[in-house]
Length: 60
Image (cartoon, rainbow, N blue to C red; front, side, top):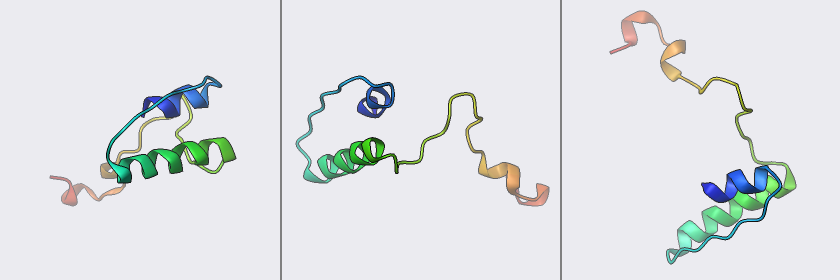
C-alpha cells in the first residue's frame, strides 16, 4: 500500500476507496503504523521465503 510507505517515511498520504472492507483494512494498517504496532520488514532484510524451511523432499 502506497500510504504505508509514505507514512513510514514521515510523509502525509491520501487514499480513497469505495469498498467499506478495504477502507477498514487501510485504516487498521495506517493506525498500526502510527501507533508503532504494525510489523514491517526492515529495509535490506530478505523477503521471507517459506520454502527455505521445508525439507528438500517437500519442495515441488
